[in-house]
Length: 157
Length: 305
Image (tube, rainbow over all chains, first blue to last red; front, side):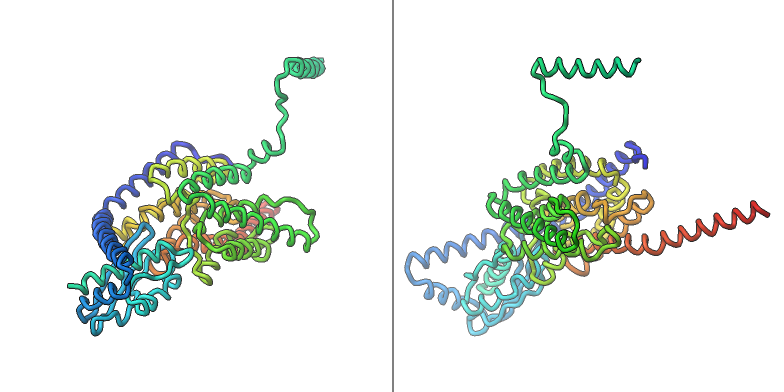
């Protein structure tokens, strides 16, 4: 079979390139919002890590986490985390200043939700975001932690 | 007389080249293999894997590639032994194994890598029509593994973890292989439908479709289009069939992205298109053949009358 004419290949490739550019531009608003959101969440994560490191230095991590728990206001808070592979959204319920329940409300990362389905219980058990990394789903774990921290920031008021 | 002269010239040229110490132009087995479509695909995949490893730090990715290739060769060896065919190193198994290992996350556990490879290669041997497999083995293995064990995919062989400009290497590699195996109508129709689908969804304001135009999803789509969708045994040869095949893969991928899974949407696309090819070759081509036979008989009758 004879090969497709190069002119057709170039023409079609150019058309696909244009469609791609149009698609990228049309969806750019969401992406720019996401990147801004991602930036703010990263800074939140950094702040939290500082809290953890301070608590480690004082040698009393439990007291640190209970201090932060007492700052939480009762209610249900949502949080989102994003990485280059997608996003995770969570709903965190606070009762009597403690994390009572965590629920994954949306998971669009390349790694399926089932990979991180055990993490919400770990957050409740440990009353914090110090969860174990899921092997093979490191990005999803980090994104989940960011989402929970985002919700907990809101719970602090 | 001319023939004899030419032969003599060749002999004398060879003798001169030997005397001068110039290397003989006789190609080695590896050189011959690299010139075949499978050889080019494997060569390009190795280049992409080595480039992709610059992100993963090496160990995880290399481990997965070696593990998958070893498993793949073992599975094909066992199947060949059982079926009584002559034993040889299976280049098809190596390509499937490399594709699987450069798609799976470098942190994937060893047993998941092995499981994915085994399932993929078993599908090649079990689900087939004569000697042609129905489904792309790598895509099938990855889908089953992702469904059963939530195996992570990062498509690092598609250079998804590297800076965006590195995608040029993927595009050049893809065009080389597609040109070699004559599958331009297939990938052009697939990418046209893929881009148009997500552009329309973006205009309609559907949430998160922007991801499809961005890394790592766009790299995954390019890698799948160039190296998996064009797999000669599981894709059609005729141009018209190639266009339809690409359209089906594009539409199914888009719908799967929206409604099924952002992890496996491309795999659904390629596998449904593979199934379409099976149906088409089994039923439609048979009908076409029957029609042409009936047409020939009618023509003969008309001629005889």
